[in-house]
Image 1 (cartoon, rainbow, N blue to C red):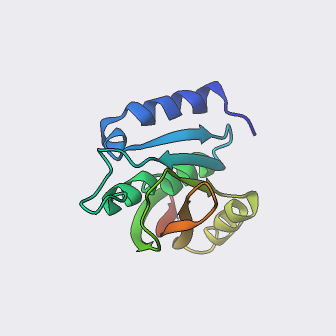
Image 2: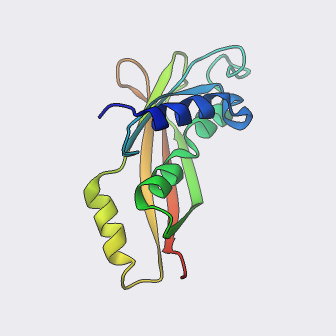
Length: 152
């Protein structure tokens, strides 16, 4: 799906927002329906650690906000969505540009809505991999997202 003007403006805003800009990463794509986001993180003087690979903090910070934002946008204002926990596993040193693709499908959104009809809140787990141009995984990030319906 193509980017819309609204998702493109949000992408530009994220890339200039000081908190995200400081990670060294850039958002490269946001689908019009918010069900897919792509980012890239290059090895630069700002992201390089003491041993010459991408700093672990940059790896995590590059992927941190997206599942929460995507679920907020997809579920709408009647839901409250928060990051609850995260873990990162470093698989290989990042010595080139890494990318990550975040996806949420309709089945997942329908399941969340269905479960929240009978449960007051729930936690969902999502994984995103940071990969190089050859598809080699350099870091795995697991996010636990807390979701509940907004009280009316």
